Length: 181
Image (tube, rainbow, N blue to C red; front, side):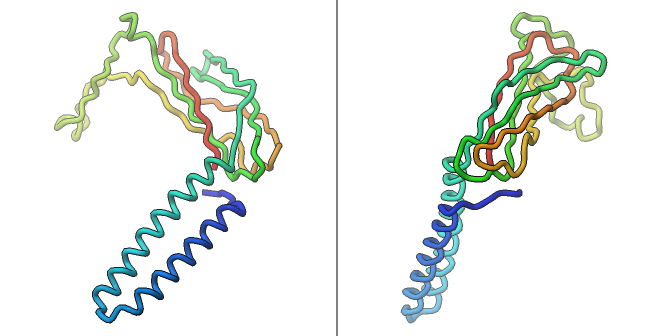
C-alpha cells in the first residue's frame, strides 16, 4: 500500500519506540529470565497493537477526501455502469490512495420481480465438485476502485470508473463510501 506518514505518524511511532525501550530497560532489572522474556514479548505485542490502532486513527483524521459531482449512467451495449466525478483532498496532508466503495443493491426482490435469483447461496458438498445450482444470482454488487494516487492537499482530480452491471437488476439502490489511505 502506497501511503504517506505525516508528522503525527512519526511522532506516535517515536513515542511508541521510547515506551518500548523503557519497558525493555526496566525488564532487564528482573533477575529471573523467564519473567524478563515474558515482559519483553508482552511489550512487543502491546506496542505493535497500539501502533496499528494509532496509525489507523491518525489516517482517518489527517487524510480527508471528498467526492463531488458523482454521476452514473449505464452503457447498454456492453452491460456496464460508469461512474464519473471529481475527487478532492480536503485535508492538510498528502493522500497516498483514494478508493471509492460502490455498493449496488437490487431492489427487484422487494417487489417480487426477481426471476431465478434468490438470497440463498449453496455452500455445501455439491459446490466442492462444481454442481452448485446455476440459477443463483447475487443481489448485491460491491466494487472498490482506486480513484487517485498521491493526491496533494487541495488538489482535485477527475475520475471515470466502469464495471459490469448485472442485466437482471431491476431498480438499484446505490451506496458509496470513500476511503483515503
